[in-house]
Image (cartoon, rainbow, N blue to C red; front, side, top):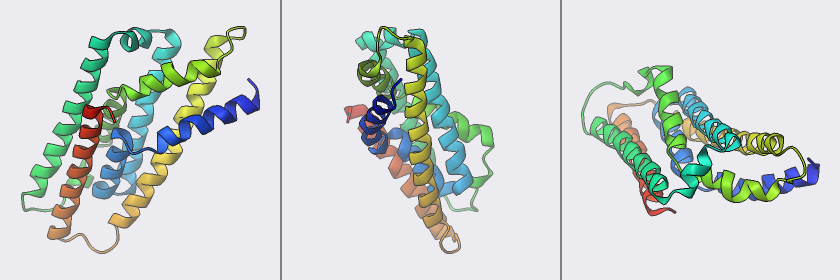
Length: 204
């Protein structure tokens, strides 16, 4: 593929990557509550979810979901429910007194949550099926082109979300985490996920 085509594609999807949504808000909430390592693990999970979208789109399996309004809506609402569940857990924790425990979560837990957050977000499918095909030339190797474009999208997500997670976690590290601060951080993290769930529910 020509370099110019790749650059145009990157410039096209970059604003979408930077737009606050369930994925970026989830990474931010983990960075705020668990620090840089938690944000990076959440980001890893999110990226794995988008990699799976890319694999499915290359195989053509996800086209069935994108073409079916019923399956599309089921996936969207599954994502809404999952984010609301995570938000509820954080808010409940914020309402209880006790020592900080968020950073003690297993690595696999945050990666799994990040994966489900992005994989259950149908907007990822829209990127692959509404934007990506416009940059593919039918006369060339379609699968290879899809893989290259998917890799660009995933790389942009990894960079942008990683930066957001690092910045938010750095802000959260300022000062000692007292009991009051811990509860405030968990409440704010839960609020971020509620916003993410609302955005996904309304399709914005």
